[in-house]
Image (cartoon, rainbow, N blue to C red; front, side, top):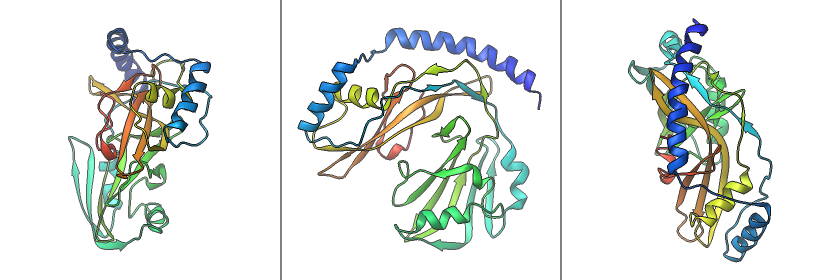
Amino acid sequence: MDFRRIEVIFLIVFFSLDIFLFLSFRNSQQLVSSSSTNTSTVAEMKKRNISFGSLDTKSGYAYYLGSQPDNSLAQNISKLRNQEVQYDEDSHKITSNLNSTIAVTAADRKETMDKFIKRDMNVLFGKDYKYSPQLSTTSQMVYVLTRSLGEVYDKTAQLDFTIEDGRVVGYTQTYINSTIILHERQAVKSEKDVITNLYANSEIPNNSKIAYANLAYTKLLEAKDSTIYIPVWFVTIKNKDSKVSSIKKINAFTGNIIKSSTTNGDNYSAQ
């Protein structure tokens, strides 16, 4: 692979991205917080029966990442056994129907499928994926791609198992073999900043629970046949009465709420 050519392409893309981000930053609502404000907000949240664990105050760092279309799945698809497989060249996605379905329960499904994906004859590059309870449902188990810089919560790098009547019947898979850093690292908002800002902006209702708060990379935009990823906080809020959950997304660089959140995270690209 010509990495020099890729770098040149991403430099061009990144100049376009700078303009996009500047306009977004200028026009978006900025979330301002301080240490004292956060402290009082946490106390107020508790009074309103909003439950959460210990909130991390560390800000940390992250990057803009880039990738190009990857043919790794197509090149290795012949390794798969005991399943009917289709490959979509446009989306670079595998769709598989298992010849022998797999019995799972709520208690053992993670252990069962963790073992299943470790064999290349079952799932390609399975060791590169990690189970995500935050994105999963009773009828779907979601595994996200893991990289040295963090996890990727995006449809371009995901393994989804379908469960019907207590049995795993098949899966879809997308994959990116490598990413490159497009810009020097930047500070990201802390978990505490994100949660308190969500509450201050009326995004967390009373009598609810913060079930998950995870930082991961997701797609920002596509340009010149390349994909740019940014760090985003994924916060799952569960209503204590209805038990309904929703995922809120927050740009980890700016702290801005991304207004495309959907229940169960069916669509969580940061576009």
